[in-house]
Length: 117
Image (tube, rainbow, N blue to C red; front, side, top):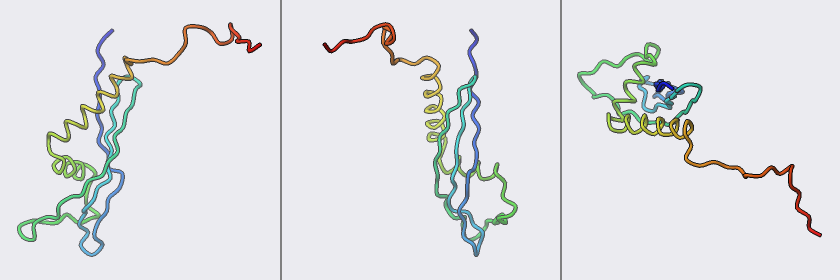
């Protein structure tokens, strides 16, 4: 059996912004991990720091792209936290592929009946 590769996809679910400036300050995001037919998702949100008052061009809200928001989220999280998210999703997928525990009984309930007489 060949080893499958997990594909991670970041998505932006919603944004919160200041109406007067259009500056986004909170991002609701998710990370989807897919391997074979197994899918695991991490949902979270993060506050984004406001840009500096000077020396920064604010992207008009209507021109912000999902890829830009994803890069802001990943930068705000930092490399270590991004890796923790990816590792956690991978662990959940690995757990589903080879579960360390199982439910069940070694007998068939239909084959045996317990009498209380």
